[in-house]
Structures are given as C-alpha cells and as structure tokens.
Amino acid sequence: MIPTLTITTAKSIAEMLASPSVQVVFNFFDSHAEEITEEQISICSIPAPPFDEKRRADYLRERFSEIGLEDARIDEEGNCLALRRGRSLSPLLVVSAHLDTVFPLGTDFTVRRIANKLFAPGISDDGCGLVALLAIAQALDVAQIVTEGSILFVGTVGEEGAGNLRGVRHLFGKGEWASRIDAFISIDGGGVDRITNGALGSRRYRVRLRGTGGHSWADFGVSNPIHALGRAISRLASYPAPKRPRTTFNVGRIEGGSSVNAIPGEAVMEVDLRSASERELLRLDAFFRRAVREAADDENATRRKDDLPLELNLQLIGERPSGETRADATIVELAHEATRALGFTPRLDQASTDSNVPISLGLPAITLGGGGMSGNSHTIDEWYDPRDREAGLKRALLVILGIVKVKTE
Image (cartoon, one colour):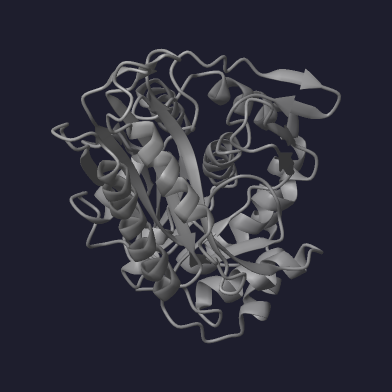
C-alpha cells in the first residue's frame, strides 16, 4: 500500500521541484515538445476502433521496449503492459491511458495540422494520454531516476462505449498484477486543472423488439417495433432528471426497418443512463426498464386480433461502477499540490474513466489530463492543441514520484 507521508504533500512537492534529477525530467519535456507531438501523431494515425486495438497496442509495446521498460507485452485481454522496476515492487503504481477510440472500423484517422491545432478522431481522447505514458517513461530513463516503488505502464483496451472497461477490469480481475496494485493513475485527454477523483456510474442497454412485419397498408395493425421504441423514448424523455445530483439519459443509436412502406420486423436502440448518485442511477434505471416494458405492452395492445405480439429483449451491455477517492487521500492531495505548484487552480471532477474500477475496489485512483487543450471530443472534428502540454506532463510526474518515492538530492 502507499506509505503514509511523514511530511506534508506541499513540502513533498517542493522538495521534488528542487531536485536536480526532477529538473532534468522537466527539461526533457520542454526540449522535446515537438518530438512528443510527432509521437502523438504516429500513435493516432493507427486505427483503434472498438475491440480492434491490437495495432496500436503493438506500437506501444515496441516503444516501451525501445525505452527499456521491463517485460513489455500484450496480455490476454489486449492491454499493453510494461514495468519500470524500482528498488521494490511495493508500492506498485499503475499509470495508464486507453488505446481505443469511439470511432468504427473504416474511420479516417489521418492527423491534420491547422495552425497550432491537431485534428483527428481520438487525437486527445486518448492520444494525449498514450503519448504521455511514453514521454514520462522516456524522461525517467534519461534522468536515470531510481524510485523506491515500481511503475506499471498500461495501455488499456475497451475504455470507450461497449468496451465496458474490459481492459482495466481484466487488469484488476484476472491480470497477473491484480493483487499487487496499490494505486492507479489514468491519463485521459487534455487539460491541467482537472483531478477526476469521482467515478461516474452508468448503465447502458440494448433494446431489441421483434415482430412479424408486413405491408404498411395491407397489414396495418400489426405491432410495429419502431412505434414501440418511439413510445419508450417518449416515456424516457419525460423523466424528471434532477440537476443535482446530475443525472442524464441518452438514446445514442436506433435502427430498424427496410422501407418507408414496410412495417419493420425488428428495431433496436441503445441507451446510456448516468448519474452522479448511485441512488438516482438505480431510480432512473428502474424507470427506464419499466418504460420499455410498458411501451411494448401498449403497442401490443393495439394489434389486430390473432396477430403475434412483439418480442422484447432488454440487454444490459455496460455497467460502470461509481465511487470516490476521498479528497484527503494522499494521491488527491499530491495532485492538488502539484497543480498549484505549477501555477494552475485544481478542481475535483467526476467522470466515467478507467479509474472507475479501482475506485470501486477501494484503491486510491484518479484520472488526470495530459496537458494542452482539446475540444469536440468523440466527433470526427476532435482537436488537440499541444501548447502547455509540458505542464500536464510535469504534474503527472510529480504525482507519480510522490507515490513511488524518489530520493531528492
């Protein structure tokens, strides 16, 4: 476990900032800014659609090996792992970023430069995090920093969408390091002020309705799956979602039917439910499931005599646990002090990230931005501006070294 600090986190950060070896690392970030950006472009040019992250994982593994990390490899789930061994394996800190994007196979991942900005699907989320892993690992090697604890660098699969955090779930479930991990940091997206210590819980559903279908005129009165989905969506849209604790719902995908004049035989929609409160999430979840059943019943009630009713299949396709790393936890205090020391105002945040899993297991975990600025996340117009990236890398480094400990001169 992370040892209790015998000095304040502010003093710990101040001592690291005064360390010549830490300054060597900082100078590396400053002097290699353009090379880090070029590395990010190389990473993001490799397609990584959901459940197809292998090419990007292979690239990361090769780079880990070139940097000199130990046992760089791909695990059974597809995560890329490499160890930077300290004097001891304890405490063992995972520093991670996710390999996957939300964009499907066939998406053009070519990176475009316009002025100071880089444009590409996933350029920030999470190209920014992946390049941070490499930059930090390489800078530690260049500065020849020896730590008391060890760092396990991990590129995870399945962080986005239907991936349902499968990579980090494996890491903490069946992975070989599962029982040895003491703390966890995810680097996800840009920014320097954000400290995500709250795990935003969510539930995701696929609703499938099947019927007999038919002709829009001749078979009018046959139960219509799309009409039933419409009824369900209308019910969901009427839900009085509280602003505090923030609670949201979204119908993100809907499909079905073959022609304007044909009653569809099948219709499908996918729905995302989220809340900052586990209690509110359970309340919204129960409302949604009831709304879907009632919508199917209402549509079936209008069908012609002797016609078959719609068949409903409601499938839970994603469930992300909620929780919180306390604001007074060492890892959060280190992030606070490091942010302030670099001239930024820290803010605690709640989001759905790889940190959800370790937080739910009671381990100290946070997600940090990797510096720079970004926008239009999860769209093909996603952009990243690497200016001030160095501040994000320096902050992450200070938090990392605050956990695994480095002797300051």
